[in-house]
Amino acid sequence: MILRALALATVSVFLAGCILQSETPLVSAGEGELALGPRAIRFAAYTLKDGVWHKEDGTADFTPEGDHYVVKDSTSANPGIIVFKFLPGKSWLMQMQGDDHTATYALADIDEGAVYPTPLMCTDVEKIEAFKPLVEVDGTDCKIAPAAPKAAVFAALASFPLTRTLKMVPVQ
Image (tube, rainbow, N blue to C red; front, side):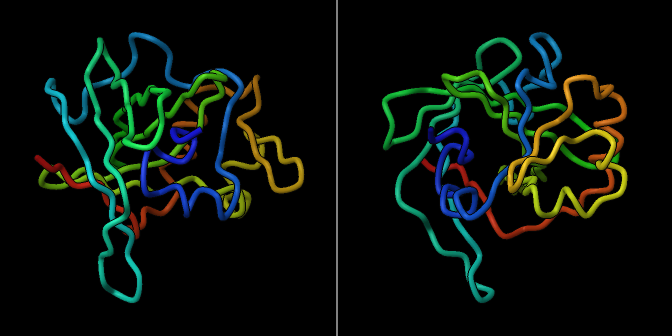
């Protein structure tokens, strides 16, 4: 499912390891925010390798619907949903959902129209002390514990470092 791979070129990064997930969405209907604005946007994705941004194949269309975006990429027939939630002092939480309703997470900086997602890789999440009581780890998989309080999860996200190795740039 392309959305579990952040809807476009971040696929290669997401497939390299497991991403923080939850069985039910952390951000429920009505709690999302249109972080990219109220208009449809087409994005191209880039990955940073050896200090140089490299464009990935394909594009993804983000179309606002209520408090979230319906995302359709150029390689998949199945759209997904991306919900943004502002985390004070930490930019945005990106929650991605596909057909199976499992939610996958990344943090994102938004700067001059470009989106810089930081996947919440399980190997990184396990190293952050604040996450340990909130996450269930099974081998290389990690999920937010069903009983974990949302406020505690949002607070733990504040300790996750942002990186700029992926970016999505609006295209015509």
